[in-house]
Image (cartoon, rainbow over all chains, first blue to last red; front, side, top):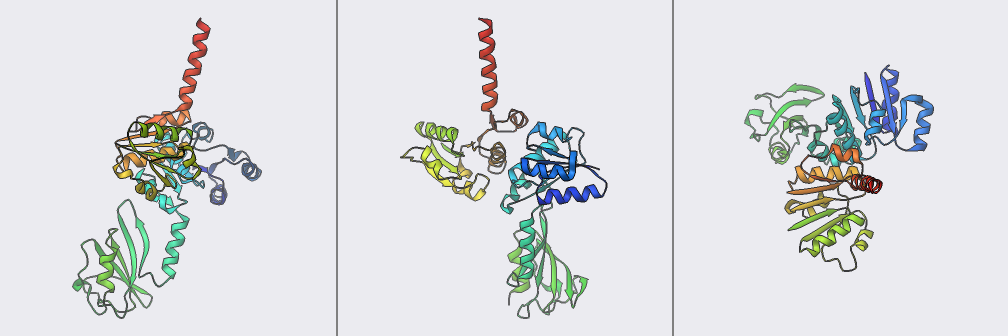
Length: 220
Length: 136
């Protein structure tokens, strides 16, 4: 495959090394002169110097061919958005992958149809949520395109849902239970599954119905 | 009429001042407090400190009910993203973006917001004046 990586920071360099080791053809674009010089020592002609939001720089990187994948991982979200828009809309690159530096900018990527996006900050936050027990509802996966998300909830001994069958819960219309993990074993949640304290329940729901789901599963 | 000016450099501050003189209600957004100095000592409009990509700042500045939005920061890419967000997310009736790079200015023309490219204007005018001088 032919891949263009925009942004030669830690992420861009790791992606470049990995893909080269797998035998892919690759061009890495870096704007900063001193950093570019270090990259050139390691990657030779595969590193090029320039601002990847400039059309002539993208064309030097081979966007006209076009690449199979473009990876935009600069430290600027607006630059990553523009690079992906140009790649997809001007050159017809079939797959773009963008890094989101500030999670607050994620809606802009969504609005402009740039996906998938990868946000280290959001991933770290999700892991923290997972480890910190105060968070009663843990976001595991966001299916932004489908407008659905998968969350995990632990049934508390105090919760009125403990001892009830799934079919007897008054779940919101916008949420369904997927599975129940008990003593390390998972089973698919069906109507007759009886919830117990300590169960870890996976649910799929429409964003915005978290509170309704929490009140069914966790209220006393 | 209400206008929101994002990025208050030489261009943004002058546009803000002119619109205010024409009787518009003007709110401005800039990352730096120094921008307030460019608006003159008695700027009567709103000033919001923050980045144009930050929707909480845009919303505080009233983007939802603005009649016009001008993206005039010193970053082409910021202006392009802000203009698209203003148009598509907040449906601001009139949106304009300053894009210095002629190539990006061409690419982003015809997407529902006005593209103003001072570089393209300068190229056209300089070429025109040289050619006219050559003819006389």
